[in-house]
Image 1 (cartoon, rainbow, N blue to C red):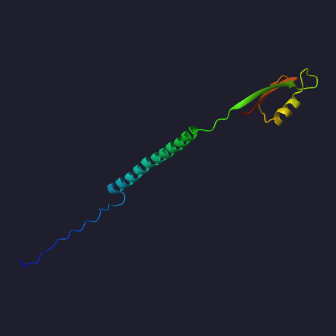
Image 2 (image 1 turned 90 degrees about the vertical axis):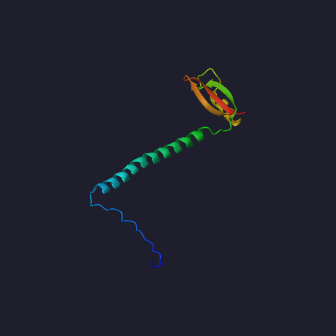
Image 3 (image 1 turned 30 degrees about the vertical axis):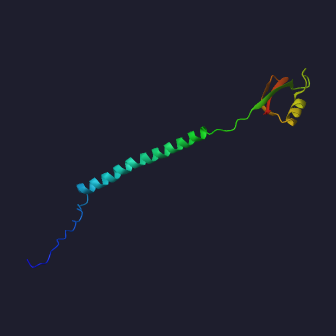
Amino acid sequence: MDGLSYTTIIEPAEPPTGRRGSALDRSASLNKSHYRKLMKPSILNSALVCAVALVFAGCTTTRPSTAWDYKIIRGGLSRNAMAAPLEPQLQQAGGEGWEVVSSGGDGTTGFVILRKPK
């Protein structure tokens, strides 16, 4: 030969483009819609798993527990009651740091359950 070297350059062929509505176009759109259908539930599922994990992490967080002293006060609710009036007893207990937890009664006498931190 003439002492020169020749290089053959092969250029990639252009991607096939079909007519509108061809099998290739339908295949590409099916792949996109299939991908979207798969991704939406997986993203939602991932978000749901993260939310549940955060809730459970909050539930397992330890809080300092408070020890309580409890006290029950009984007394009369009206002037006609035979028991000592309830209101002055509650005023005194409130001044000592007691707080009401529950109460009940029958109309003439009543009780109040109190608590305060130890």
